[in-house]
Image (cartoon, rainbow, N blue to C red; front, top):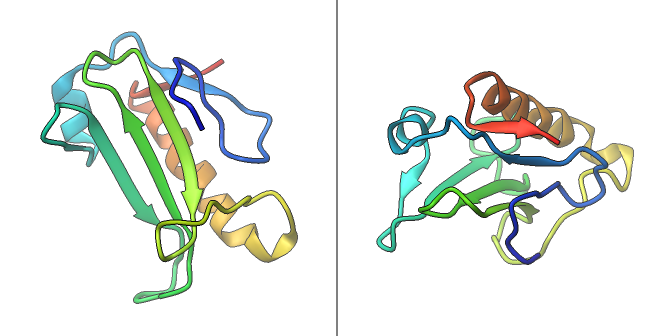
Length: 113
C-alpha cells in the first residue's frame, strides 16, 4: 500500500486521513511511537485473548509532517497482509480494529473521509 493522505483497511470501504488538528503531542498521547526518522507508528494486536500468538496486528503509520497515512493489518508474523473483511472468522479482529480507529477519530488523530 502506498502512502497517501487517505487510507483504508484492506477490504473496508471506510477511508480515513490524518486530522488537521493532530500534533506531535496528540500522537504520543494516543500511544503512537516516534520512529528515528520522525514518523509516528502505532501497532496493536487485534485480540481480546492475552498472549494470543496468531491474532492479526493493526499497523498505522503517520508521516512526520502529518501529510501521509498508512493503515494495514498483517498476520502475527508481521509480514503477510490480512483482509479482516474477507470472512466471519476475523469478526473479533475486525471489530477491535474499527474500535481503535473510531477512538482515534474521537481523539482528533484521524478523521473519516
